[in-house]
Amino acid sequence: KLIIPARSRHRLAPSNPQSQTPNPQKGFTLVEMLIVIVIISITTALVMPSLWNTGERALKAEAKKLGSTLRYINDEAVGKKQAYVLKIDIDKAVWGFEGGKESRSYHLAKDVMFKDILVPSLGEIVAGEALIEFGPLGTEEPLVMHLIKDKKEYTVTFNHITGKSNISEGYVL
Image (cartoon, rainbow, N blue to C red; front, side):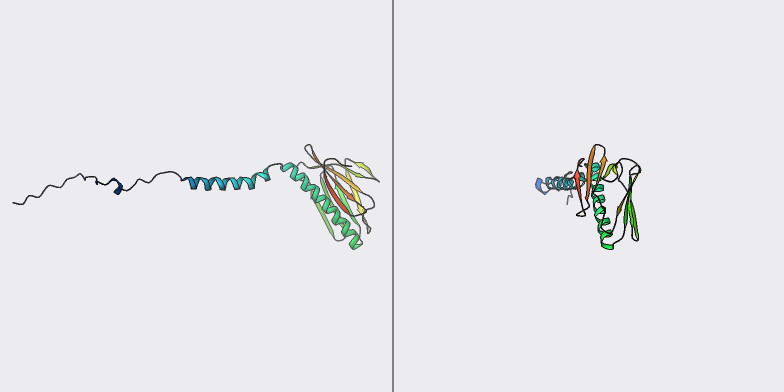
């Protein structure tokens, strides 16, 4: 007679433990973690400087814009032999110019204000509106404007002889 052994329901474990399929480990490798840290560091380095000192940056940007506009008005008035008028409303923190066929108006950035404007013929202007004329020879006198935000100040000076403007940190006469 031929005896056929009954099938076993249990499988025997292989004798070689290395032949078993390894369980996939959950987690990240050291290289993956380092790559993520580098990406986060680079992103932080690019974003954070724009968030720091935003008040001072806005104040300095307004001073630069005002200085470059003064040079532009002077150059246009002299180059085109036309009169231009710089208008500054200290109370509303608005300024702009008119002349030739163009007119522009600007609002100062949030919380940036004019502290005062110094014009030799008009004296110190601390409120109201100031009108400064630029004729075919430019303006006839120097201008000094002080901008303030919180406790930080910038000074914009315009030299009527050279037609150049200068931006300085602090209150400069």
